[in-house]
Length: 512
Image (cartoon, rainbow, N blue to C red):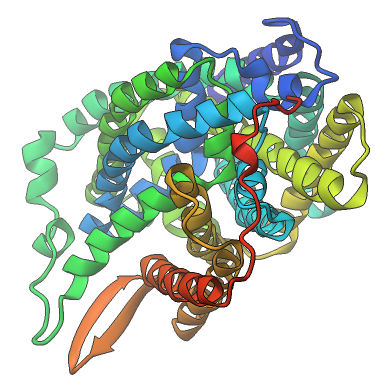
């Protein structure tokens, strides 16, 4: 057994043990959905920081951001401004959502929307959107895990080729079923220590083999370092880059796993403090993006020992190849364990978030309104298993390029919940049926724009009076959504169509 494989397995076994021990950590009645699905809302600043970090900075980020820089250059750095833009917005919005959810016992954002606008249909749409957007996101975490397993030559042949991936996901399903949100919250601490150690070590050691940073940047073509000037009558890549950063920030906040991590905090102050300190992850993300340039200068894609990996996974193999090229075997195992655990932590949180949505806003709202609190928890646990099985079947049965297409659509879709959730936190002015129509219009517009791009990109070139304005399709679709909401609200008010009652103002708290 190689040193890399031995270290990898040792750390994986350690994390598995922590996952199963998590149900004894911060004891609570895990037969209640508030305890299983939100950790009892008792996570302080320290744990929440790791939980949200593990939630937002995933294995696919670890693989995909350097891969984008490796292949496309400067465009890959859009991930930095979008994470930085996100935190001030989180600071303003999420503590308010936490406060309302805590007072009323809400488990999901769809709970809030349903009662704020007195509309089960609107809550259902928010829940369905969240689940649809989350499924390919979970599947893509497995891409990072697949790449690592392939690099370590872990796997069988023929029908058994994906056995290690299946085993890893079965273990994940087992400890998430027993520990709920506590399991990934505890593991996230270990995951981030591994990732920070890996990134800081590699960013010092590898450049020494490549002539330092002056040598690295001296060998990168200018086209990969900067954007070219836009063509006449077009804002070019400039507007595409800026809107991709802004739209991604707004979309990421609306994902169920982000909101679940926020609602697991013990106070709104914890959420605010994390919005202040989470940019530390953006610093690491910036260093991580530089791995793409290091891999480019090292020509890892041309080295014979890595060509099979690049043939199978393309630029996604750049980081593993870079690490194997320059770091000792035992540290490669350490780094690969960081990536693998970085897949399991967000996958667990996402499956819990999707299970919460299904249980509260589909099963309880429409299928079994009289379900007990313990029945809710049982349903969520089973639903989390089905979510994981679905994601596993997705990644094994659907080509990676289609998974990425659906993930691109996921950002376009999830941002359509922004009006109902965020505007609803501050005013009830939008009519409930206007929000439904706005959602439909935004979903149709965003999906249509992605289809016009053959689902190969998300920067849509809108032409107005002979000028072209390329921008993130999700933002264009959100503008359509908001426009419909404004016009339809005015029309419904003129027609005196009832807007329902604001359930968040009732004094009697709901059950957690």
